[in-house]
Image (cartoon, rainbow, N blue to C red; front, top):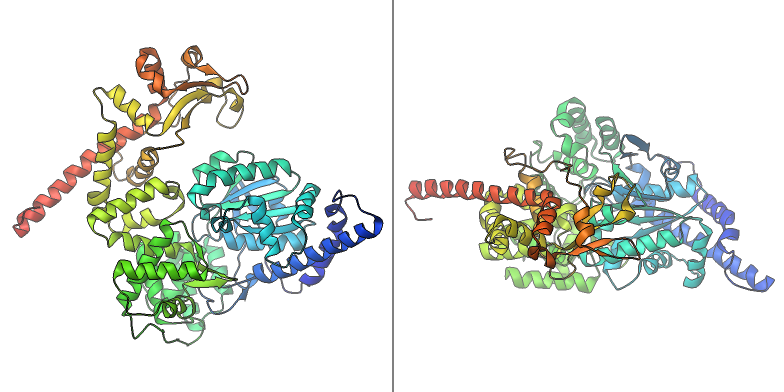
Length: 622
C-alpha cells in the first residue's frame, strides 16, 4: 500500500475493531451477561477511539520540508525494502513482513526513514490485516521510571484509549496485536539493558502477538533479543530517490532542475546522500542556495541550517522575522544551539517538556556567557521560525536526531583541549553504545580529524596503554581483558544457534557490571575508522581456530542449573596453563589492542613531524 486515496479509514477502523472485540474480551473476568456486554462495548469504543486518533497522528506528519503543516504520510512516503541475508522483503504490504516471523527487528542508519516506515506499517496493518496495531515511541521511557508495558499502555491512553490497564493487559493474551516498538536507539544507555529484558519477557509471555522493533545498529540489542529475525532497511536506489522527489510539494522550478541533475549523474556522484531520505530532502532544501553538493556530511548539515535560519517555508515565498534577531547575531544563535544540543545529548535527552527545554537554554546561556536575549523568544524561534524543533503534544522534539548530533559535535570541537578530552571521555564512559548508534564522534572526526587525533585519540590510547601495561606481554593482555570482563565461560546451551556449530564455539566472556572501562568498545570503534587508512596493521581473522574446552572444564566452576562452566579472571595469573588457554581464547581482543598500540605509534610520529615542520616554518616552539 503506497497510496491512501479512496480509502475510508474510519470505516475500516470500525470494521477492524468489530472483528477483534470478541477475542480481545475473552477471559477478562467473570461478569453477568449485562456487565460483560457493557465491558465489550467499552472495549470496542476504546479501540475505535485510539485507532481513529492514531491514524490522524501517524497518517500525517511534519517534515524538514513541510515544517509549518502536517502533510499526509503518503504524499511523501516511498516504499522501502528490507534485507535479511539474501532475502529481500518489500514493505508495500505489512503482511510481507509479519509472515516472516512474529518477532522482527528493523535496523537502519540515521535519517534512512525508520520512523516513517513504522507509520506506514501502522496504516498498512489497519488496512491490510486483521491485527490491531499499537505504535510505541520507546523514547517515552526516558521521561520517567516506567516499564515497557506501562509505556505501551501510555501510548494508547495518550490517544483517547479509555480502558482499564488490567483489562488491556489481559487482552494481550488474545494474540490480536501488532506492536510497533519504534526507536530502541533513542532510549538512554542506562535503561537499555532493562528494556531488552522487558522486551524478552513481553514477547515470551504474549508470543502470539506480532512485534516489530526499530533501531540503529546496537550490539546490546543485536546480541540480546535472539529470537528476532533481523532486517536491514535498504537505502534508496536511483528509481526510488527520483520517485520521492517527484512526490514532494516544492518550488516547481527548483524541483525540476534538481530532478534533472538527479536523473543525470547526481545520484551516482553522491549516492551516500541521495540514498538517504533525510539527506535527499536536505539536498533539495539547500539546492537553490548551495548548488554544489559538499562531499562531507557536516558541511551538508551546516548548509541546511543556513537555509532553515534564513527562510521559513521552502514551499512558498515566506520568511518570519526572528524574535531574537535584535538580541542575537547569527554566530551567537548557533553557539546557544550548539550548547543546548550538547547538554541534552550528553543527558541522552531527545525530547523535552517546556520546563526542561527552558532549563537547557538557560544553561546554554551560562556556558556561552551570552545572556542578552529572552529564553522564551529563543524557544519560539527554534520551534516556529527555524522549525528545528517541533511540538508533539506537550513534548518538543528535534526535526531529526541528526541535527542534535551535528550541533553537539560543533560544541565539542569549540571547547578547550582539556574540556574536549573530558567530554569525549565521558561520552565513551557513559554512552558507549552511542559509538555504534550515533554520529557525534563520527562528525567530530570528519570535521577535524587532526585535532581529534592530537587532543583526544593519542592521549586516550596512551591512557589505555599506561593502565594495562605490565612486566610481560601476557600480563599486559590479561590486564586489558580485565578492564572489560570478569570471567570466561563455556555455555553449552547456545550450541546449535547461528555461529555455534561445535562445542568449541561456545566459549565467551562475561562483562564486568560495575566500574567497567570501555576501552574495548572504543578500540573497536577506532579500528573501523582507521583500518582502511592504515591497512598494513594486522586485523584478527573472523575465525581464529582455537576451540579447546578441556582447560575450562578442568579448572572451571560448574553451574548445575544451566550447565555453564565459569572461570573468574582473578584466579588466572596464578595458573600458567590457565593463563595460556585464556589468552588464546582472547586472541581477537588482543589483536584489537595491538592494532591500537601500533596506531598510537604511527599517529605520534605523524603529529611529531607535523609539529616540527610547523615550528620550523613559523619559528616557534610546539
